[in-house]
Every structure is written in C-alpha cells, then in structure tokens.
Image: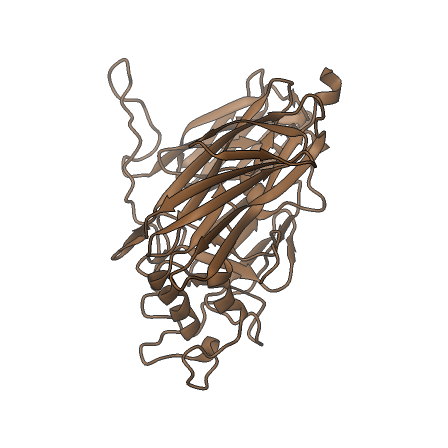
Length: 436
C-alpha cells in the first residue's frame, strides 16, 4: 500500500504523441458564463469601461508593508487589453476593483515605502481576494515550503490547462517555495478533471512554472511527470483554471499510473499499449475503474486556518466526493491535532478524544455514483461535512500546528477495502502569547 505523501510538482512540454479518442483539446474558453449584473440599485446602468461582450469579475485585497501594518495610499494598477485600471488602498490597506476582465492579471503595487507585484486570476462573476504576503505573520511559515493545498489557500499558485493539452502549475507568489510530490486530483467546471503529479519531489520557486504532459509513463524512460484524465466525456480547454481541495489520488486509480503492468495480458505494457481506436490501455484502466467501482476522494474547502484571539473559531468543511459511477457507503475521518477543541459538527458525527490530546471525528457518508454528461461536466455526488474548531485555552498549540490528512475508507464492488487521503490540516496560532 502506498504511504501517505505530502504535496510537490515540476516542468516538461508538448502533448503526448498518442492520446485517447475521448481526449479532445478545445483551443479557448467559451463565453458560457453570463456577464455580471450591471443594474444600479438607484436606477440606470453603471458606467463600465469594458465592452458589453467581455466576461468580467472583481478583485479585492489588503496590502501591507509588514505583518499587521496595512499600507494606506498605495496605488494598485492592473494593465489589461482594454487599458489600465487603478485604485488606491484605504486606511486599512484595502483595495477593490469592481470590474476586471476574467483571466490572469498582475497587480502592480507602488508606494513610497513599498513596491510589489502580485499575480491574480479573476473568475467570472466573482471576486478574487488577495492577501499580500507581507501581511502574514511568519509565525506560521511553512518549513521548508508550501504544499499545493496550502498554496491554493494562500493564493500562491495557479493550475491551468495550457495550449496543446498540457497542464501548467505556476508559483504566483513572491515569498514561499511550493513542494509538489503526490499525485493530486484537480477539478474544473470548464475542463477535464485530472490526476496530476510526478515521480520525484519537485520544488517550485516563486515565479517558476512546471508543465505536465498527458499520459506519460513516469516510471519508464519517457519523463518524470504527467497528467491523466479522470473524466471521460469532458474536454480539456486551454486557458481554464483548475481548483484543488487537497484530494490525493487513491490507490485504486494511482496504481494504474504507478505500476507497469499488462492488465489485458497481450504482452504489451499498458503505458505502451495503444488499441485500434488510439486509446492508451493505462487510461482505459482508469476510466473502466470509474465505470465499475465507487471511488471516494476526500479534501477540504480550505486546509489552512488562523486563530489569533482566545475566542476565535474556524468552520472547517471536509468534502467527500464519489469519483466513480457506482454508489457507496464510506467512513470519513478527520483527526484534529492537540491544542484544539471540536465545538460542533454538521451533520452529527462521532467525536472522540485521545490520550495525546488529539480529537477524532468520524462521519458515516452515503454517496451516489457519478453521472457522466456527454460533452460536459460529470455530475458527482459530494457531501460537505462541517465542524467548528477552537483553541484549547488550557493547552494551546502555538505557531504552526499541522494535523493529518482527511481519511476515507470504503469497500469497492469486488469487496476489497479501499482508502483515500488528503493533504494535512494546517492551523496557525500566532498572537496567543501576546494576548494572555
């Protein structure tokens, strides 16, 4: 059985020479999302500098010159194809762009005492929230680098489908390295869900990008990293960004990538076995397993939380999703590290305390099978499992406090025990000593 791995990844180029027949590349994002509502509540229409057919979103955030010291009067500029948008930070260091074109932009921050650049990705009809790295107290700084889930939570990374069927991971931050090493499950409404990863651990420095080819045998001689489809009917669309909630690829799928086998016994190793339709056998193994099995993956809406005051609490949302097409029952476990208390769960769960001070939460979850949609996003059954956490005032954990990954267990269609994991829970308690 594979050991639980922490996160990390790196670069290559080009689409694998042989793909599968359902693997299709769409060159650009289709404008499928409606424009934001521009109606003024007082009547009339807001004056917008952008053409009516441009997809728009918003961006807001806080700029600091040092931790907990907001920077007033900093000029934040964004250059885009329609010109330049510019705002100034207020007394709390806060800024907001009500309208920006959807896609990747660079925020250029200028002040007489501080200058920086921050890469953002503006979503359609939503606001992306940015926190300048300098605003964050380093009491919870990662050592030696961020995992991918934490990088997402810190707005420090983007994962995108690139031209020619590649997947790109870019460290968009300025302060921390990113470690990429497990095989992760990334999802998107606009592009094919994927398993992305590599054989060796890779560290991505600020500003660096790594590129993943499709369907590479990372345990052969072809390369060190790859991505594989985990959604048969969807297409990969260049320019679409992926989400990641910390879910690691379970062994029931990962084994087909990791093991160099001949599952159809034709004396050709599956990574090299191409059938008459141009399909790679290893990819078929993944899709067939999704058809024939339940496959539970687990993660969190966020994995990084900061509790700074005695009364601070955080609501943690664990997400369990069935990536397979058969229904299943699963037990989902979260282990909260010592120094914290569980204040409530929804839906109700079994909560037990251990001698080491940790707390285990167990939910019993029923998940329906995924429903493929021809040419579109598969409809998955996902359960959100919420719990509230607070600091144990009698024995707090101070600084960076790492927990475990979410753990799920279930029985597959062949009565074999299966399991899946996520990246760890990370809790920061940075001001506790000052406030006692």
